[in-house]
Amino acid sequence: MKNTERLKELAKDYGLTGEDFYKDARGFVIITRNGVEKIQARDSIGLTYVTEKLEPDFVVIKAIAAVDDARVESYGEASPKNCKNSYFVCMAEKRAKARAILQLTQFYQLGVYSEDEIEDKQVIRKKN
Image (cartoon, rainbow, N blue to C red):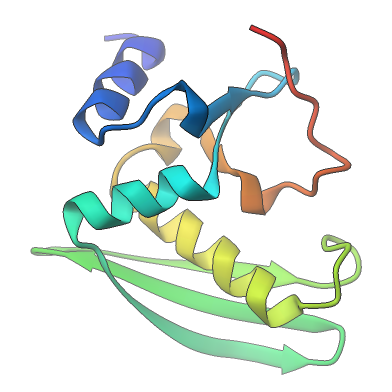
């Protein structure tokens, strides 16, 4: 099965629509924050957060996502180098959450990234 077919299948399974995704001109698919929330709700994915690093200009948060017997740990980071707002803890938490959920549900394996991982100024939306 091709990645595109598998992505369509997963999107249908999770009740995601075209509004939950957009294609980046660099060749990957981005899922919106709302899409990530839909995935979490559908599978009742539990999340635990651990603060790994908390400095004025650098934050790392670990998210542990679990459902049934499956568990994934992933990290989110934020600093002036990758975040244009000054809310580093919030951004690191959003990134960790999205990464853990997308890994747990196999979206990451298909090259789907969260919009929280990419700064708006970097996003190049491709018109369908």
